[in-house]
Picture 1 (tube, helix red, strand yellow):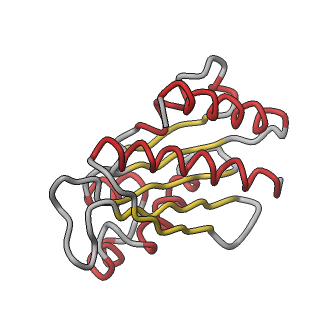
Picture 2 (cartoon, helix red, strand yellow):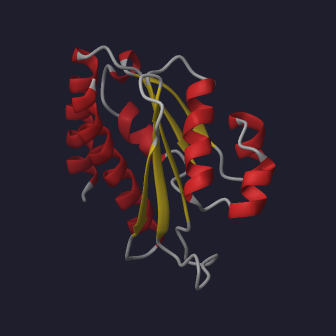
Amino acid sequence: MSTKKMQKKAEKLLTSYRKKKLKLVTAESCTGGMLATTLTGVPGASDVFERGFVTYSDASKADLLGVPTTTIARHGSVSAEVAEAMARGALDHANADLAIAITGVAGPGGGTKKKPVGLVYLAVASRHYKDAVVEKRTFKGKRDAVRSRSVDRSLTILKKLQAFF
């Protein structure tokens, strides 16, 4: 998806969240802040976007978001469990209603048979619901495509979930 189309998608998302008075926080690993950049590229985003965490290393996931090091050791930083813990940690460290987390293997290196390049976990946690939503995706393409598709999918998930508020 082009940057222009993604900005439009972010603008629509922020408009619907604004109407519902929802606040959002992001926790990003493989996207390195690309989702936060997309959201904050929309004028007036500050009344919806509360803050963003870029937790690229395992240590930063633990330090900034409180992801248990045992969870990282047991499941790996690219896992459903870590994605959910990132989302919950972001929510714990922000004044927001929803948190979305992204962790994955963007490539070109770092992939394994079990966790190939393109594998991404996205998780959303909410103050209003006990259960988190976690999604596993494998995106095709090179590093920039994996990162861009992760951001696009995040915007889609957030748009769908706003119907519950």
